[in-house]
Length: 320
Image 1 (spheres, helix red, strand yellow):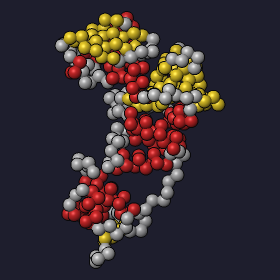
Image 2 (tube, helix red, strand yellow):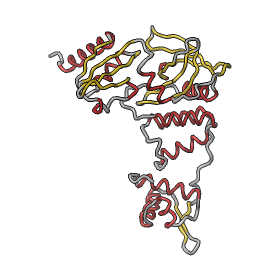
Image 3 (cartoon, helix red, strand yellow):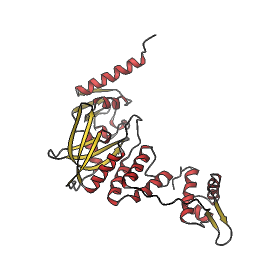
Image 4 (spheres, helix red, strand yellow):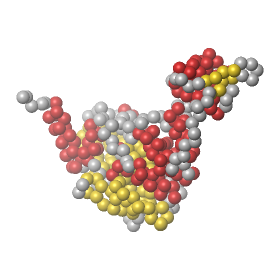
């Protein structure tokens, strides 16, 4: 049990214990939670204050049990619905890895209800999730996400329609290797048919998915997380080379998905990457707390200048 769990979270765990084991004593609750008997009785009090009927009986075989009307009927989720709930939990910034937390524990139960192949992909999504750094990030369509997760689990090729801007859109057939979440943004790690190039597509930019009959085998040594991070440094249209005036060990605010960092000397670090969205990349760089210079990538340099000018104008409002 996590030491920093709130009394309410522990009370909910008591509720689950009593649902599964009516007649549990205060001593047994205390042992299960790793707390004192006095604390266990306090959590019983929290449940009763919430108008949850917890009955107690004395004697050798006494203990606590829930009154009538508390147990919920079984819930049946489709794979798409269950994955949608997983997505909602991850988008809500909950610590999905902490099964002692009531939300994390509920997520674990939902994962058990998924088909085995889909559950494996959903577990990968859960493990690679990171807290969202910006509320401006657009969530992907749950239906499209569910289709991609299922296709990846079944190792079926998909045709997808992708759009970066209204005038920049295309279709492509790919092998969907994995769906992952990094820094709050959802990605499809895949290999394009024909070219054999590894690509990372943002799920919020995928407009349509068609699952093909053709199957595929992903690389036997595939590490989706490591491959995602490598792919962020290459494969996009616009090159990036930035020199940051800070030692590499001070750049903890930069995710590894931003690009490849290498030390130049004790006070300078080089960032090498590519990007398909210079304006978005400029916003990432603006969040660095150290001075930096764009030394390669005219598109990125122009985007940085445009962002800087916009911020300067915002700080100098026109009188009137």
